Structure formats: C-alpha cells, structure tokens
Amino acid sequence: MLDIKLLQTLRLSLINMEFCRLDHTWHYNNVMGPTSRLYLITAGEGYVYHHNRKYILSAGKMHLVPAFTLSSYHCDSFLEQYYVHFFNEMDGWMEIFVDQECEYQIEAGPQDYVLFQRLMELNPNKALPDYDPKKYEKHRHLVQYLQPVQNQNAADYLETNGILQQLLSRFLRCPVQPPDDEKTQQLRRLRNILRYINDHLQEKIPLEQLAHMIFLNPDYFSRLFTKIIGVRPVEYINRKRIEKAQLLLLTTHDSQEKIAWDVGFSDLSYFCRQFKKYTQMSPGRYRRHQFSYFLS
Image (cartoon, rainbow, N blue to C red):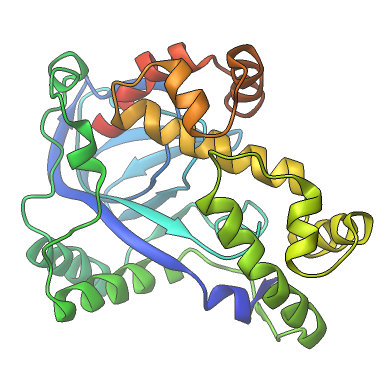
C-alpha cells in the first residue's frame, strides 16, 4: 500500500511528447532509460514486453513503462500513438510504479484523449528530433531533449503536472495507506539524509557521516535506514549513483572514466561491475544501445 505522506512527495516533470505514426522500423530490444513513458494508442497495433509479460498495443489502450525498466518494442505494420516521456521522483526508496501496485496497461476513457490533446497544446515542440538512431546520435546536445520544460509560465506548468497526475492515477490499483505517524516521523528525520545523498553522489559518503547528521550511532542508523527505506544505506547510494550514470551516459559525450568519477566511483572496474549489476550490461554497451530508448 502507498503511504499518503510519501505519495504527497511525488514530483513529475514532462520531458518529451508527440503524436506520431510508426511502422515496422519501430523495433527495439532490451532498452532501459531514466524516464518513464506513457502511451495512448489511437490506431494500428504493436507490442511491448517488460516485467516478464507481452502487452499488445492496440487502439484505445493506455500503457505505462516505468523508468529503469528493461523493455522491448515492436510494430509489424503501423501504429499511431501519443507518447509522453517524464521524470518521476518520490521521497524514500519506494517506487510508485511497482508490479504489485500498478497496472501497466488499461483501457483509455474519452476524457483521456482530451487530456493528451491538452498536454500537446501546453507543451508544443517537445517531440524527439528523429526516429533513426543513427541520425539522432549526430545531435551533439542530446541533453536538450531530456530536460523539463524551462520556459512555461506558472499556469501551464501546474496544468501540465495536474494532467500527468490524472493520467497516472488511472494505473494505480492499490489503496492508499493511512499515514503511519511513527514511520512518517522517522522518514522526516531521514529526508535531509536522502537529499544530502542525492546532492553529494560525487563525494565519499561514509556511513558515520550520515549517522552523525541526525545524532545516531552508525549501527542504529543503518538499521533505522533499512527499516524505513527498505534497503541498506550503501545499496541506496549505489543505486542512485548508477541511475545518475545512466542519465549521463545518454546526455553527455563524457568518457566512462569521467562519468564514474562524477557519480562517486574512483575505480572504473568497480563502477563497471556495479553498473552491470543493476542494468545487466556494461556502460559502453548501454550507451550504444540505449539511444534507441528515446526514439521508440
């Protein structure tokens, strides 16, 4: 069950969206990237495979692929769809779109078509530049296509986020858990720790330093962190470092050595082992392969 206090920390940022017609060239295997993606199918047929299941994409379906999900995409003839790429983040280790609590494909209602059309009006010129990975890779500044909208006024920004929340709410089937006062209080103690970790991934982050920030001994801090967040501190830190590395591999031309250093790994071989642990591929293969993620 989702804790209402955690749910209230959900942050969304629209990155790309477009209405497009795809053909048999929409064929990508084993893709994984840092944005979540949302589809509304209007005509044709294709399929997507993730979480050990094949989903048929057909007219009237809405489909959600969470960030950092290994997935494959195929179309044999043609497929017309709206797509939205977005960042989502929530305090704590908890993910909002987990298998036990989320539907990944649902029937779209009449209002959903209206909402997608309104998103297009609010976010023009946010399409990806090309569907051919070879051409797309020639764009020297991929990062510009992976940035939240910067020039929206306040009203459009709030409306965009409100629409995204409405659309994503369709996929959540879990009940909302009443706030656990004790857990909420403990999470509040850890919130500055989580923020510190995210802001200092490039640096060494000793367990003793984190514990000292909230006046606990390291052993007790580690147990508390694991109880509230669900994983040990070192696991949380490594996961966040690899997520940042995935984004840097896609949005910069920096070397693997520089990226490893920028996310807090001083040893390249250890960085590569950790990267493969979480993504099932090396950083180099990920960079070559995952450009297609943003083109599907």
